[in-house]
Length: 147
Image (cartoon, rainbow, N blue to C red; front, side, top):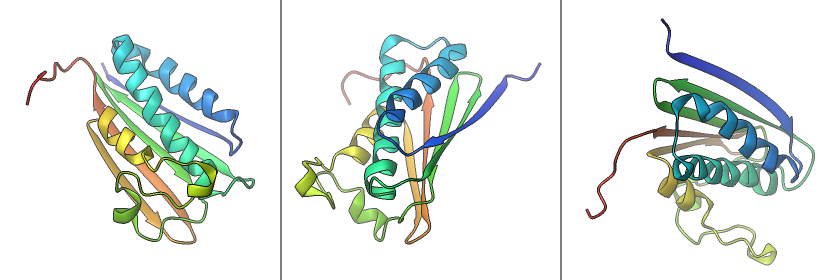
């Protein structure tokens, strides 16, 4: 029996679709029997990635965002892709509190939140062509309270 499940969804880069993205990924994740906290973590990470695509990738202009999700056993892999302006310096963009839109009250914590709520985050971007955010999370893994 194959324990891999996959979905791809594509939607317009409008703010109201951020909620849609959170809910569709949360629904897809249910096969892993996640805790409410794990669902919340994944939804938050998806929300941050999609919001980044809308605000920074497309600069609130029309575009499409694609989410690929793969569940294998109790692991989830996500790719959030846009064909927006891209990120000139990914390393700099991933620094906590760094934002290119301070005038819009952006906190610069999007990537930091993704990294906090997911087990691994990789960002690939080509300036002028778009960005792919890849995230992984193991569901049901007990993490130490104190490290």
